[in-house]
Image (cartoon, rainbow, N blue to C red; front, side, top):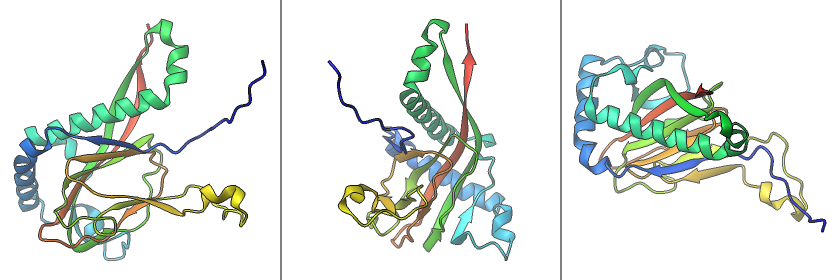
Length: 221
């Protein structure tokens, strides 16, 4: 029997994961950030560039955070790498199945990692992370005031044309999608996807960890 079908090619995948250890390591992680800023008060080069307009009212570390020696930080980075691996395995399942007899093993490499501490009202303007398969944002500290328009992350539609005016393509009408920030939550998304953050105002600063990664086939036996 001939069956009808709807193909869904090139989907935009955003993974959402929760770190069960977050509450146990949060204080150590925040202490590490405080010590880091004392040692690196100027932050990365962008903060020192008066002509750079990609962010507002924040502190940002260098892009080599994974080289720092801190147990709490590396527990988070391990959680991030594991979550990226799960995302990559799921979306690439058809390709992996074709290599099943060769016992493929995926390897996640964290190429860049950094943290951002947003001062009150701080924000990052729309941007993407370029030629990386998976990027992420991990909410290390947000605060109880967080809500959809206060400290959340938004993603922009990757299609350039405007959607048609008829109802047939109504599903394309949203120009962006917003995901609320929660402490211990991780979002994994394609590096090409434009995104930004809504300004956050609360008792505590909003702090996130970001990573850019690549995924390789570690072995093909």
